[in-house]
Structures are given as C-alpha cells and as structure tokens.
Length: 138
View 1 (cartoon, rainbow, N blue to C red):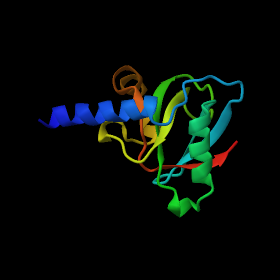
View 2 (view 1 turned 135 degrees about the horizontal axis):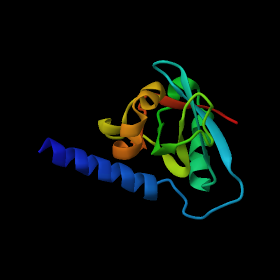
View 3 (view 1 turned 180 degrees about the horizontal axis):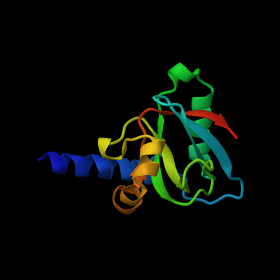
View 4 (view 1 turned 90 degrees about the horizontal axis):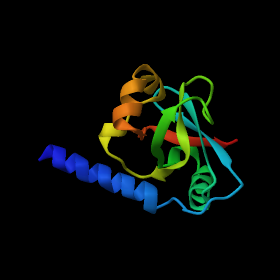
C-alpha cells in the first residue's frame, strides 16, 4: 500500500514537472538561477529557457527569503554543466520546475547526492530538495 502511494505521488510530481510549469517551446534565452539548501547552505545552479519556469522563479525572488515556499525538483545527470564546480552532477537544463511539494524519495541535499551519485543518477534520477530555495538569478 505504501509503495503504491509513493508511486502515485512520484507520478503526480513528474506530471507536474512536465505539465504544470514547464513550457514545451524552446527559446534561445537561457537563464541561470542559484538555489541554496537551507539546512546546510550548499549551493546549486540550474538553468532553463522555459518562460513559465523563469516567471515562477522570478516571482519567488520578489518575496523575502522567509516567504519563499517553492523548491526545485527535476532530473539530474553526471557532469558539472550549469552547476557549480563543487558538484559532479547537475540539473538537466529545462527538465526541472518549482514545486510546492514532492515525494520524500527524491528529497536530499547536494553533498549527499555527490556521495551517492551512482544511485541517484541510475535509480532515483530526480532530485527535489525540500529545503532548497531560489537565492538569486545569475
């Protein structure tokens, strides 16, 4: 029963990532954002060219940090790409969104992903750090 509920929650999270806030059109204007994990101040970078996602992140940035409620959730891959050089993984550009809630299965922190990268890339594939908040536009 619990596994079925987790699968349903994960399916809803994936659906929202693909359909709720991601604009399927591609654009030349890629925007980079810095996210901070509130529990340990670890920084992550993510980029996108999806207008709806950009607008949602910018709306969060208009609020004081204490009032920001959305966290990043999306697919991750090997390599530094858009991310800081601190990590050997990155959010896949355009394959992430801002969400209010996500399943616990993908919740963690950046250094834990780094330490367990093979499992996260091969099995979990999605990173949704609940304690993350957008910090600034780069």
